[in-house]
Image (cartoon, rainbow, N blue to C red):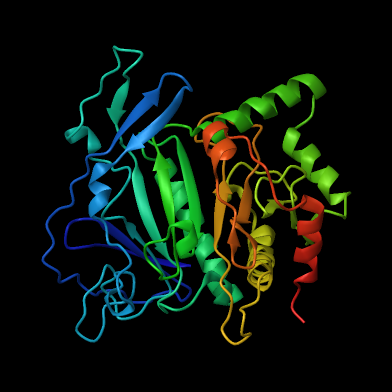
Length: 368
């Protein structure tokens, strides 16, 4: 991997990732941009003990632009974008409309003296990861070397962002599809560097520590061993990775992808694990796209999904295991799984598809 660092016209950082050493990336951002200002703050919910991010400035972010005005495409044919180069392989840059930003303390004063109204600056960082220059592509369209380059970029950013003093946890993810809420159709993901440990991670830590206390063993190692021994929910199995539908899946089609060796985060993967990941991950994404064929059979189906890396926080969480969770909100052709009363109101999920049936369909969705 070859990495080139540069800055955009408003001072934000941008990084090119290339497979070929010595690739020259010297294009200059010629746009007349004013410095971006973030008013991010985090507020503590006193009832649930969870942090909520308030980022009102994001109302002004780009929303469903025409393909010819996409800010994630390369700058070419006289049109300038967020990526100054006329072409690229993988590129990462600071979001111009971030939920969290390193300069938030300059705009937001902390209030920690009132337990019912605790407020702090939203110090953190949000980055955009562009997987390919082709506007109409998808991650599933990438070849294995490009998917490996994305993995290398995720790993590099995890290492660098974890070193920032205000960051507690790094979260790499992709939202795909308008049904998910994506506002830019270009193939891309995001990385959030949080100044707190999100509640889901905190709950996983608590469960893993309780399991260790009661059994003397690691929760995730036991879980993976049990699922690998239960073929009815296993979807894919490699030498270094395993993919399965969880026993208590929340979403209609949900797959968890684990390295067979427990590690804390992306930086701890070894070369053999990194080399095998692209083939298994691309296989999973393509199976998701085959779950719901296009009605006319002509256009490729693009199943909406969220793909998320769960990593241990910077400090603590030694019992956690790196894993990727991939799920779709589509439960049947033309039908979505909405989070209505019990899910949104109580966080009590009701699934429409049994995990065993979902695994069977995903196994059957292998390429012909």
